[in-house]
Image (cartoon, rainbow, N blue to C red; front, side):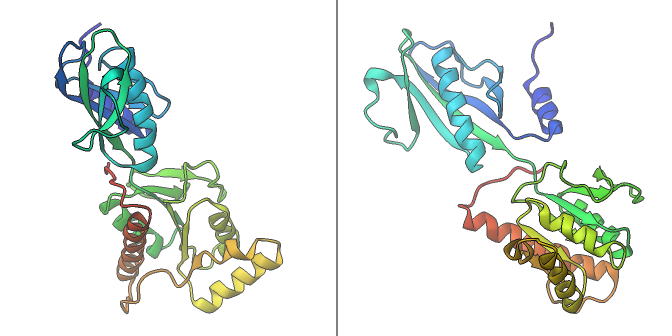
Length: 270
């Protein structure tokens, strides 16, 4: 087997669409099996691909990676002999982990989380939906589009308005730009998703009418209340490209506001 190319591993992990961390040994002291400059990829399941040192180091890194993926924050950890650890944080701010390895060495490791950019689901096959998708791709968002929509963009696909299988979470976005084609069905699917932000390209009256029907049909009012319509910032947009820019500007505003509110987690973009 050839020598492991950690940068190939990083590229492969990026393509999986799942979060992971890159751990780099930045300093060692006394006797350790780890060497400065060594790198490894640690998956969200705790698999370590690469060499960072012995079992004590691996346990510490696995624990730190879980926290880093959850917070999205880069951190420096220090694995140190148990008898030298008197607090959870060293004098220089490094997070400390106890080591029971007989070598007695100290290892400093930088943990860098990788998190994919948010996904934007766009319902509809209209000039506005296509323009939104194009601008989202330029802004670095992952895309999900309905099957049958002609597009050269790299996008996940969903059929029959079934987006439950998409890897959506609270930090992702959904825009309904159907403009008269299955508006109610698509809006229901959008509001049933775990995405925190849902918007619709429609007049406020139309959105209110559709929302009221969903509540009457049994959908929770708070769930329906997440809908923002008309979608986009008020910039007096007229044509599809301008409307798409206003929609993406609002999404970018939401994204940055939500990041600050949740603690300013750093994100790596694809």
